Length: 239
Image (cartoon, rainbow, N blue to C red):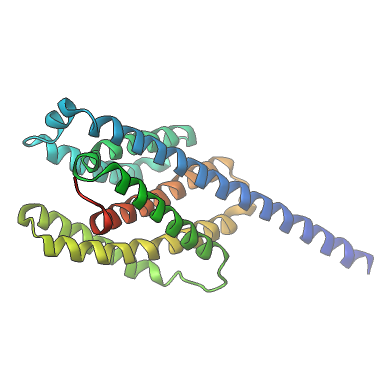
């Protein structure tokens, strides 16, 4: 009997250790994401309120470089993440966040500051609720993944095509569908980040944990930014 008590106590201690580790892991994910968001909006505000920089960055062929630079960096990040240290991966993420800020800086020219703040708050509330649900739900939503990723690919293709077409109707449809897709991805990614940690927690690989937290931060950051941009196109008040 004493042996069973010892085993049960050890199992309980191990479970408590994993729970504490999971909380620390998710705190790092959300903390890294939050710093990335601050860098993004600081860069966007600084560039968006500087007419000289806006003219230089969003005129001619340069605007396409600015527009597609974040997408290229995401692909590059995925390709080299295994070769980077956790510290280097974190720096890469922060650099990406700053570049993303430059890429979306035009919102401070197109939309009023008040509507940007209003939509940001709306996005933050929606994101928090969706992420909390993804973290706490007992429902397995892993099956959403392939459907949502296919949706993202479709959005990227449609957005690139609409750069040349400039159709307001297509942009409206992209924004409506995009909000739904990235809302789903927020819940899905949160659950997947949690499950990924639980699956690897017993390995005790601190380097992997560090990089995993940064990749998790990137995933949730992209969900937030894209949902914000889609909602801004739908709800933002133009200058």
